[in-house]
Image 1 (cartoon, rainbow, N blue to C red):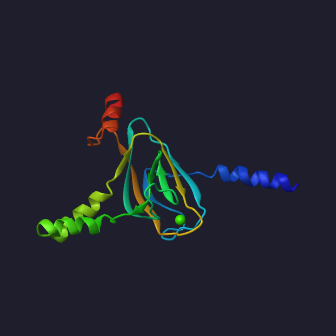
Image 2: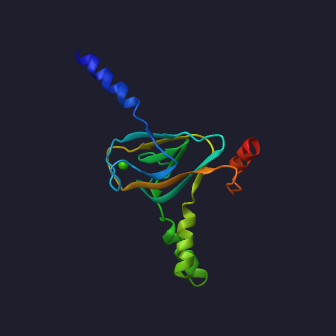
Image 3: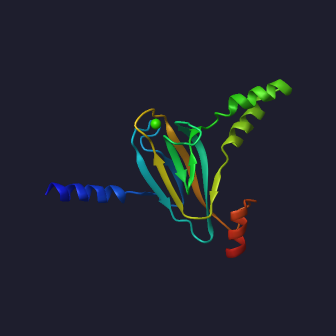
Length: 165
Ligand SMILES: [Ca+2]
């Protein structure tokens, strides 16, 4: 009896991928702005033949190591960890050394360090955390856009436009 209960729980845990429903929304990590350890949450979103999914990173604060081993958000195979704007200090230092810095330039550089991500294929994402050191997580504003009117020089978008528009 006990065995069958455990088996059922494991089966349901494996099928709990969360869909990003609708045409746009805000996607946050579990418990944002404070994730817990041992999290393993999948997300998905279908992207149609005439659609592009644009992910705009409003906030990312995930335990950092160089290969994103411990905690990460993986989007279609690409791992993301670190804090958005964490390049800021280095950037300011180098800019100040050469010439003057204005708040406007600083802001542009922060935004530029975490550019929107455009996906032409279905989103398949995983948020994974290990057992220690928890941070805020992520907050991503997403939107499905019309592929054929989307202006972007990204190679995979141009290829999909050529094939479908
Ligand atoms: Ca961690």
